[in-house]
Length: 332
Image (cartoon, rainbow, N blue to C red; front, side, top):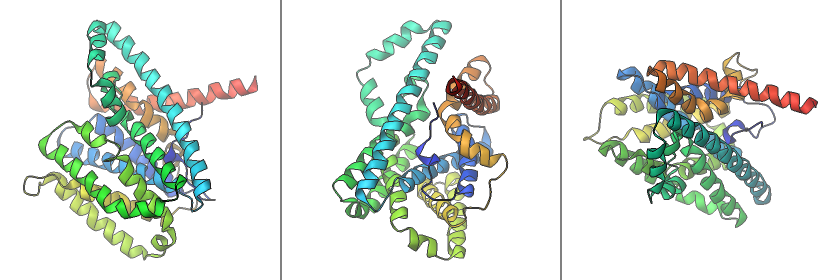
């Protein structure tokens, strides 16, 4: 089962090794979002991880674009089907493991009662809320599926260019949703609603592909300057609220966007040792399985850095195991 995430796909003839590097960095720091460390270091690491989610959505939008609507529809539909399959398989695995953990912990009856909640499945379908199977990180997959469906329809009816005019409104909606959730400490799942998470950023990645030549021709010094400015304001607003409002999302999007443009401008000439391997081969498995493995570790002994380390290494181990099994099956 060789699974390739949308952000694992780069529609260019030569591989973007710089993108592999940042995929590796962000895949690792996303783990710190789910197992946060204490203090300002934990806040910084979690912030980097959140920027990584935005970066992944950008790549998803960029890699799924084609100026030929027919080809774009074919590519997007292919990704939609593949990621739907991935999502179902991984949810099944999470469900089985969670059920076993509840049985072992003597909480199986309470676990079954949780399914009586009438909002359980609406929240799952609309918000990607999979907390009942310890699958919170999988909201990304739910949002991505909806986003691909919308992109498919845009190309199917040849209205993608018109949809780009809605980008400012969609970006503002995402900023508002994140600002509201983080300012008032409400349920973060409200911000994972696909129209407030996947659609705005993925459509932005789509727009970058549409205007690729213009973005690539812009001066490198300008991109670096804007990235530096946005990053400075990002970490200022993470620690300092503006009139008691959390506006850091503005700079998270801006920083991830500028970094993405920088990545496109500097694709690199050769693979980067270790990190290139992680970005190219392991980033998907780290995303899919780190939380499940980490929760199991935390159930035995709760030390965040231990859950993080075992989660990452365990995910890499699952990739290699899967690769080994595939090779043996192919030989047969």
